[in-house]
Length: 225
Image (cartoon, rainbow, N blue to C red):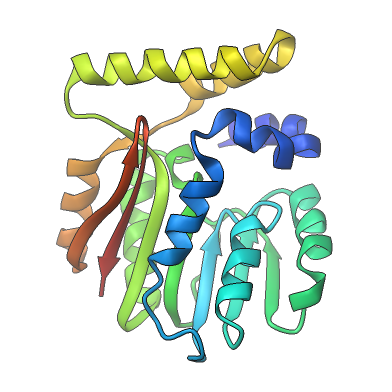
């Protein structure tokens, strides 16, 4: 994880700009993630965002659910500071924590836990541990919605997906920035197959798993408690 922290410490200054260059359909992905939150818009709900970054997802949630309380977790102090500025209009309903979500104690209950392009950064063993922590922190009827990179079950298809993604990065980036993201994507990222994630979630106790959205190496799924 230290490599991941180093990577984002070097790219965080322009992450809001670069996000659209390294994530296919970044805005659509975030919008679909928020659309998957099936609670009534006027309901008082408690939401946790794992890997909240500069607050893009939290802002969408705050606008969609005016009575929601939202906690955002991110290990980058720079991203937390940017998120504070971006989320200033919603500061009375927002709590931001500068912490690695692997170190978070999940000491309160949530109705919804969301994450966008974050969980793939940790090992598969840590993912399973995190899924259990999420499950235990959710109220009955709660939702876990994950939008992330994934690995296809078929090696042939997975190689094709990687080639498409590599071309996507080469189209949008250049020089040292391109080298940095290629190394991050193909040497440091640890995407998990949908089958393995589904199996882990169901063993923990999640119910009604549903794949909501898929594009190249990105997926959004929802799991109910």
